[in-house]
Amino acid sequence: MSRVYNFSAGPAMLPEAVIKKASEEMLDWQGEGMSVMEMSHRGKAFMSIAAKAEADLRKLMAIPENYKVLFLQGGASTQFAMIPMNLLGDKKTADYINTGMWSKKAIAEAKRYCDVNVAATSEDNSFTTVPEFSSWNLNPDAAYVHYTPNETIGGVEFNYIPDTGDVPLIADMSSTILSREIDVSKFGIIYAGAQKNVGPAGLTLVIIREDLIGNAGDNVPAMLNYATHDKADSMYNTPPTYAWYLAGMVFEWVLNQGGLKAMAEINERKSAKLYDTIDSLDFYANPVEKQYRSWMNVPFTLKNADLDAKFLEEAAKLGLQTLKGHRSVGGMRASIYNAMPEAGVDTLVQFMKDFAQANS
Image (cartoon, rainbow, N blue to C red; front, side, top):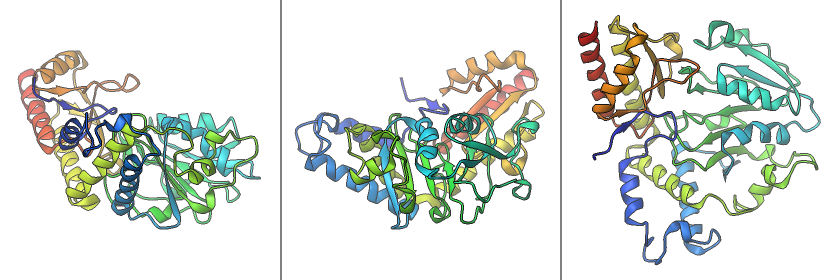
């Protein structure tokens, strides 16, 4: 069977070139006589893989020298706890912006450690928009401001980076990292689970400004202290070595595509094709305010929900897989991260047009 177009929100598609190279190196990485997954994480071979991955990521994102890059485990969900554990210091409160399910999960976890000020929310609008920055009720004494630039379930994405002044801005970029250029210096911490735009599940990236490391209390476990991982170059314990290796190959692949500027052009074009199709046909609908529509995750409903099962069945026959929407939203969702080729979006768009015509 030929490869399908996998529109899953995560684990998501990997670039085919990366998978092919990994398969070629599966038994023997560059003459070492062993697979990367068998290597010691402290051995010379893997250390070279790790160093190149970090160097390529720094180049891609133009990460300033005063930021550390950590390759961790536990997914973005562990960061929901690590952030207050490491950043509160002697402060008692933190600001959070609520724009969807992942924001709500971060808020719920933070409440275990501090007073959470929900400085802005779009819940009253069913998470179909982003609160205007002028409406935010920020606390100048907050330890940090946390937000989720892209919500995978609702398909809502910020079209601006909030200016929080001297209060560190923390961003869960799990579903938007590497999709375009960003100014890393505007953030205190950027974190991201890998399984969308970076690599396979099991790896978590944390890009953290140096002055935010070393502020954890004595009661914070070593594994949940950023200083532990910084001091050990992300190798305090055995890291997810194979996921790290694959992420490094993804970084190299993105560089070979022309970097983040080129990826942004492709991603914007892919999402525009899909949204244009949804908007031009009375058969489909997307509820998100247009200026805040996600490039990465495109939810849509059919005018007649009774046709959902038929839509999914016929799409699957064309190799258009995992299009079912999240259970909390319903309908469909097309996640079109970096590795989704434009041909996949073109195939989906043509199918949507044909399906609408045949079932109207």
